[in-house]
Amino acid sequence: MNLTYIAYPALAIVGIVISSMVWSRVLRRDAAAQDHRLEIIYIAALCGAFVGAKAVYFFAEGWRVLLDPALTREQVILALLTGKTITGALLGGYITVEIAKKLVEYTKPTGDFFAVVAPFGLMFGRVGCFIQGCCPGVAMDAHWYTLADAHGVARWPAVPVEFAFNFTMFIVGVVLYRRRAFPGQLFHLYLIAYGIFRFGHEFARDIPPLIGPITGYQIAAIAIVLLGALRYRHRAATVTAHDYSG
Image (cartoon, rainbow, N blue to C red):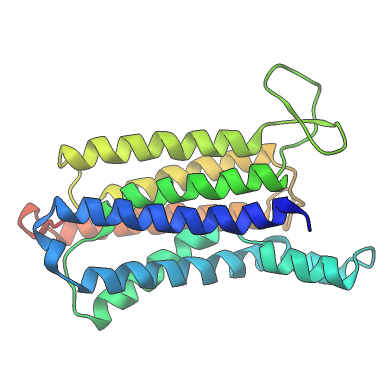
């Protein structure tokens, strides 16, 4: 059995476990820590992120796997089982959190918690990508920063770059959260920042386009930016500092 296919889901599980620990630690700093509805919201976020990650992957490129005559049945099943995308995870997670909050009647902002937890968990996902060799950058002349793929082709280090982005956003999120800056808006800022980053960085990734030169992931990235911007504007107009819970 190829150990890379074990490492990928194993790291995803580790990321979820550690992210939940970070989530719990953040909550202990807040007066809402005893509100168990937040645990339900977190579980909803995980479920929504998983569904969204699979759905957007299939929209962006997964459907091509079903039409590829060169792939065996086992390869098709493996690709569909392992294929997922951060862009879909962010969209699906956000939507299910909002639904869960309405169902449990939790009205305070929770995005600042996720602005700390989300990039931290996504870093583990990118480590899994690096081990498995998926999500490659475009082929290019060899430089000190390029990475060779399994066939020895020099490529843009797409996975390490995205890891670095999320690591940076994790540090920024922690600092802003501790300073109580942009109350209730940190996750919206993260969505905007990640969407812009992902749209631009997608041109350096070896992903087949969906519409013209645009990939399905870039369409999802645009949706992420719009969602973050619209929700930022809405939150700014409806939530005061008194309503802030983290």
